[in-house]
Length: 285
Ligand code: GUN
Image (cartoon, protein in one colour):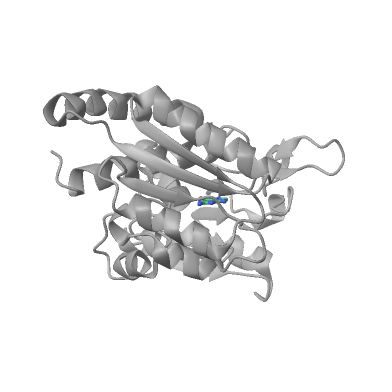
């Protein structure tokens, strides 16, 4: 039986630490860390994520500022709002919820966020800093995975790490972070030949492809650590599930993250951490 990596419990532990530090921060500086969240349009999944971000801020004593813009907002108006927030001293972090409506240029919008307030770490300046290992912010999901591994006492140095998925938000930065911790890293994707054989080499397998229960027992070496970044609906019953077939893989793995309750709760926790870092960097103690 695998050890269950309890993301919910680990996230709660970190949020309690952040809340305690936020109280101290507020006493010293007279302000709380502040996060602005912009959502354009009415994508229901995005609305849930944004609500959870506001709630998480409230829970740890941060200020959050919500901007709900109509789906037909033009680029100029969105860029003007970002510019205003870039200059607002009460706002330490700015997040534009993705995806944006098709008529908006995502790259241009993300470039407009001041790198010091870029708590998603999506700005090319911050991406470059991650590449050279000198960063203030890490993208929230891969940072959450690293925190789960660290707090579960899982050693990375010298281990065979296989990351499946090469998105800018998860796969690519995940590979860099594992490399930074001296893992031997392989990145797999849709064109990888004999994916199962490559995955079976992994001591640490990170699954981030967005396909419900794709990773079955044949993808996993006995005793591997399996991290499931997927958040899907199972076609059979519409229930939440990961990229990993949990029932099939759990008996083989040494440790595994469940879905829900694994990586998911860590993502917003890392957003809080980045917002705190931004507040500290912007002159407050
Ligand atoms: N949409 C889905 N995930 C994310 C995320 O991590 N940040 C933002 N800004 N939008 C998202």
